[in-house]
Amino acid sequence: MLDSKFKKTLLVIIFILTILQGCASVSSFPSMARSGNTVSLMIGGSEKARKETIDVVLTDVNGVAWDLQALGKVRSVFNLRMDAKAEAQNYSSFLDAYFPWFYGHEPVQTVLVIDLPVGLPVGNSKISVNTNIDDDSSGILQPFDIKLEIISGNGESDDFVRQDSDGDIAADFSKLEPVPYAKIDFSGNSSVIIGAASFIVDFDQTVVSSGDLNVYVPQSTVRGSVLDTGEFGDKQRMVYWHQDGDQLYIDIVSPQGLLSPYLLLYIMHPRGIASSPNFQLISSAVYNVYGEKIILSPNMQYYP
Image 1 (cartoon, rainbow, N blue to C red):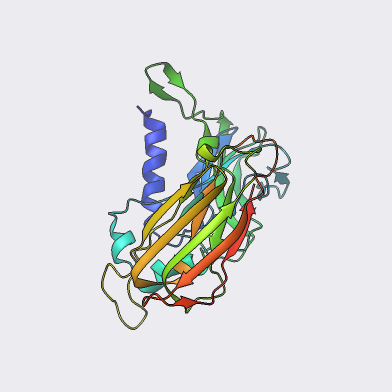
Image 2: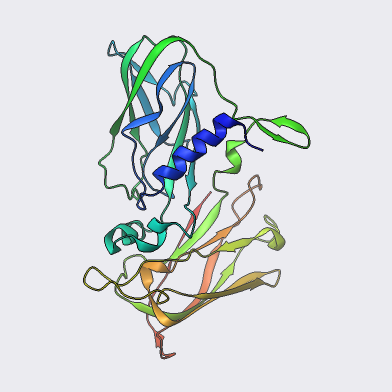
């Protein structure tokens, strides 16, 4: 069971998630904090953002810049997805719903968690954030500034303690961060309608066990177009995949047709393997809704 402070944090995050494309904070949560406290920030929508590569600089009331990355104060960057039954997920305008897919990912809200340094002066400060990625769907130019008022007193880092049968346990934010994965998509071919696609992926079986591989294919609830609202159901797809110990076989069928930006898939493996699994897309076949083969080359990138 979550403690009250963690539940309060999650409620605010869920509220912010009503913005489909992933928003950037105007102020942190909380908007006032003491030196040493933990705060969270909404920093857009991205699947590439990582805590190791983000730039976070706090400028205090006296104009002194505190590099939170260099100080080891960046605790986590992770993504949240809204309830599939949420109004925003199902009944947003076409542009709001399509925007994340234009940037190559499903609708997500990227969250940054930081600890504030000890010794900050009291007064209004700002936190400048640059995620150093090219897939932010917030529409905000980077770097962007987030307001934070430092109040008097000494705070402490929050472990977001939860309770289970073993007692009190601190939250492990790394569990919310992505594992290494390979991504297959059709970026650069936004007007092609796909009826089916098949992929064969090879990997180094000496590095990663075939039984540890998993495949994720996000669904889309984007309807119609700017001019026509359209009906639900035309973005459905059926997915089947398996591995034979040597290769991975993935088949996707969309009888009504699927615009290529909405066809994404991720092949994941556990952290901590000795080296890259060397994923190789050795075969792909793409068909239109009539079952005719079309010339369309997928992209594959690996994100360790």
